[in-house]
Image (tube, rainbow, N blue to C red; front, side):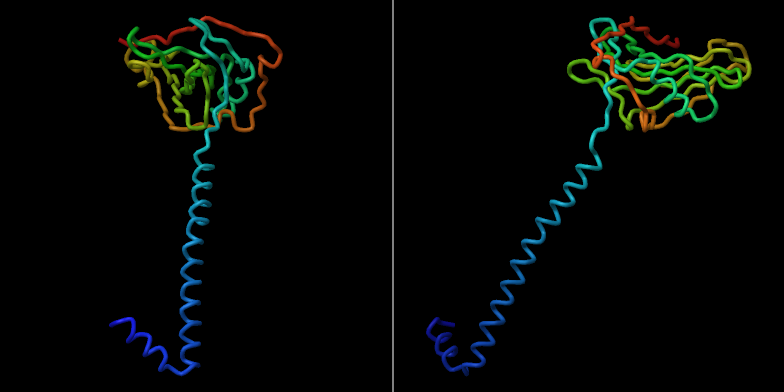
Length: 217
């Protein structure tokens, strides 16, 4: 249909009909603009919510300096959090950071380990630490958790690993009936509500040699 024909039809419409047509067109365009503008705002809110849900909650615990661990949070401060994390009556009396590296070509991994006793039986928990580019060691709520517990007939358990990853735990004794129970979780609450000191705030250092975990052959 030509422009002249459209113009002639428009002019033949009563003035009231032309006014209603103009109003309908304006309302239609306004609604379309409103809907288009609403979508970015809604998307922004979703993006912000997603960003908050994946926010990293890692806590700086130590830093690797050559072949030693520079503890930023004193291991003593982590004993009670470990007791709470076990939550089964285990009394933790030793906390340290272990280096895990089966061979020199393997990238070293680091675990925060708490050891103790429950009802006379040995118990240990290892939490995988995140390693930053400057060799700082962080623990987050998403760090993997491994628990190793001795049963009747076993006096001591140790974690086994491949490369730089813990793969299980075994009893030190090979006698029949001697074994260890293992539990695994892909998250932890060790530092939830924990009150920790920072040795760097006091300009002090507590440096200890690394103690590699034993390898099961």
